[in-house]
Image (cartoon, rainbow, N blue to C red):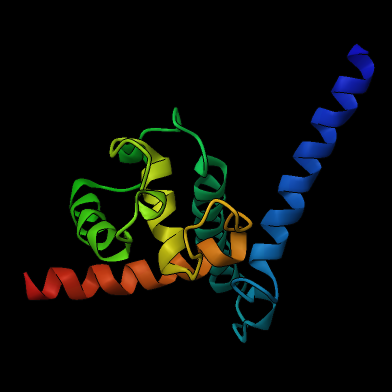
Length: 151
């Protein structure tokens, strides 16, 4: 039984690696489309892409967890304020469309980012995946820049 459980854990890790590369490639950040020609430039682009992909995967892992990673480890206080404003915009009128997670948890931000990315917020719907989270995170950063500008 222990050996079977170990194989399942390895497969889960493999699946996360597959999701990471999916985010880096065609459906995600399209890193293979770079036209950079210098090693140092490609290296910097790759590091930035990995950092973004890791943040997206953190959001995916935090999804549906009431005891997720603390939000402050991923979003600074100014970004959290912007998320609070967006939370009000993206919550629905019914209890089922309210963000159910504690504000100090990454799952709270994950719910908002997923909504921005196109997830409808219904529990009957499939949970937001990496590509939806990536879309939502991109839009969030656009909203955040505008929010800072107009404050």
